[in-house]
Image 1: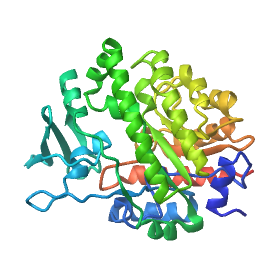
Image 2: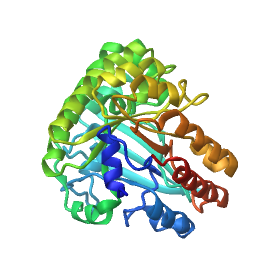
Image 3: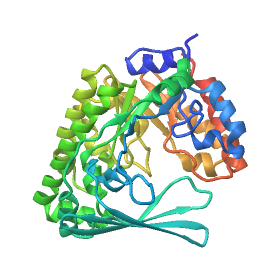
Image 4: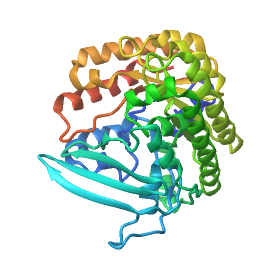
Length: 387
């Protein structure tokens, strides 16, 4: 019988393990600092996750921050994280409570003028909503890019802790934002698509700048620490219906391919992450050279079945997916078990498949329905996933 690390390495290497690995995605059993391991309402589920699933622990080295404002708050990377630069820039931060949320308003003083951003964190929800993006026009983008680029230095001192906690219980995965995402997220999503479609040359220049910064920073990150797997996030921003497939070819494939090549040169694997409709760009995803893909959402959320993904790329890529979170949160236990059975029928044969929800719950307390559905999901995979 394989341990979890052996099981996950086997599928990433194209081998057949003893059973289909089970990933619970952002619910990470082996990271004592993760919020889900410190929330009492998640305790029972996380105990089962540790006992019966295969951990893909999301972790990466932290950017070093050396510059502080008058209040003693680190600001250099806080100000410039969205620009992949550690160059120190003055930033004003105002925080207030509004109903059951914390609102944070930031003003960044760039060489070409001020930019503002507003974020919202709702009580009991473990995510940050960006309600006002940094850029509202091309002039704002030019302001953002006027901040000089200074490469980021990384601190991997936490690696010994996370490596010790994960051990043979799984593998460690870092996330890399692709340059498309970094450029697109400067603006509100609808405004981004107009920018990319109507001012393509300007957008292309921005993506290229972001790519150059990403590659330099990734080299530095890899110099201090190499983990097992890297997830490239962002390609979904160029999938239909948001942009035509030719934009995926232009703004994802060449840059993701360079990222993959660099990571491969260090002996690690790469997983390309893309929600939504991937049918028309699946061959392009394969062309990047990535070792794996996720989460391969089935219709109606996506536009391709898991069986079709397996037929098209299953011999060359490991597939992570595709149990919808909404099913785990709102479905019945019988529905969950049936969906697991369908996934096994579609993608289990020949290996190269890790069953995984498309996302994870972010609210607290955890509902009893979601908890019971997760438990049924895990047991069903153990029952149906043996080789």
